[in-house]
Amino acid sequence: MELPLLTPLVSDGFYMNCQPMELPLLTPLVSDGFYMNCQPMELPLLTPLVSDGYYMNCQPMELPLLTPLVSDGFYMNCQPMELPLLTPLVSDGFYMNCQPMELPLLTPLVSDGFYMNCQPMELPLLIPLVSDGFYMNCQPMELPLLTPLVSDGFYMNCQPMELPLLIPLVSDGFYMNCQPMELPLLIPLVSDGFYMNCQPMELPLLTPLVSDGFYMNCQPMELPLLIPLVSDGFYMNCQPMELPLLTPLVSDGFYMNCQPMELPLLIPLVSDGFYMNCQPMELPLLTLWSVMVFI
Image 1 (tube, rainbow, N blue to C red):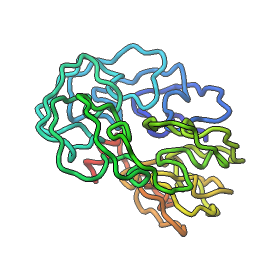
Image 2 (tube, rainbow, N blue to C red):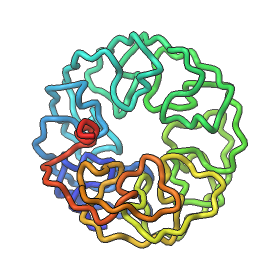
Image 3 (spheres, rainbow, N blue to C red):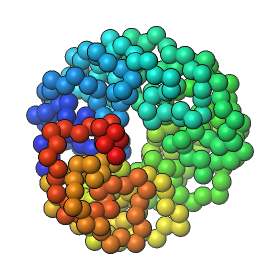
Image 4 (cartoon, rainbow, N blue to C red):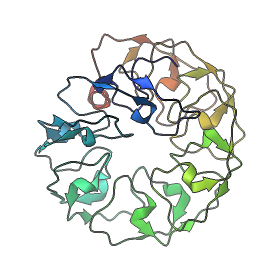
C-alpha cells in the first residue's frame, strides 16, 4: 500500500520520508526493516508499544536504520519514573516486589529485563503473550532475569498438546504445508523458525498482525483451530479496501462512525478489521500508548 509513514507496529510518528526496501516478502513483526533513510521527527516521547509512562527525559540515538519493534533502543539516558509495577506488555500479574535495574539503554520490548529480584506469584499457567494452549504440565525454570517476551523459555519439560497448527504470533497466513523443526525449546516471537520446507501462499501482500481492516470479501480457510493474534492467516482471496490509513492494532481511537464488517469470525485483538468506512478523527498524533489511555 502507498503509505507515507512506516509499516504497522512501527513508530510512525517518529520518522518520516522513509524509502521502502526491495523485499519480495515482508517478514512478520518487522517494522523499520521495511524502510531505510528515515529522518527522525522531533518528538519528546518514546515510540509506540514502549513503556512511555515508565521513562522520561530520553535522548534520541543516532541510528541509520532502526531495528524492528525497537522501543527504548531509540533513546538513551532515560530517567525511570516511580512506578511500582512492571512496564507495559509485561507479565505484571505474574511477578511482584520487583526492583528496577540500572540500565543505560533499555532493550526493546523488555519486560522483566527492567526489573530483578522479582517474586513469582502462584499462577498455574504461563505468562501472557505465550502459547499457553500449546504446552501443558510445564515446570518453571530458575532464571535470575527473565528475557523479553519469552514464552516457553520461562518453562521447561513442557509436554506438547496435539495441535495441528502453528504457534501463535506466527505468520501462518504466509506459509502452508510446513514441517516442524526438531527444537527442544521454541524461540520467542519466532515465526517460520519453528517450521521449515514451507510453501508460500499466493497472497499479494498480507502483512502479519494486519487484519481484515485492510481487506474485505475474504474467504475463510479450512482450519480446525484458529491461532490467536493471527489475522490474514484465517482468510484468503482478500480484496484490498480503500482506506486512507487504518493502522493495525489501532482501533476506533483514530476513527469514528465505523460500520461493522460481516465476517464469519472476528479475529482477536483486531481493531479496524471489525469496521470499515471509518472517518478519521481530528487528532495530531495518537501513539499506541495514547490509544490505551484514550480507551
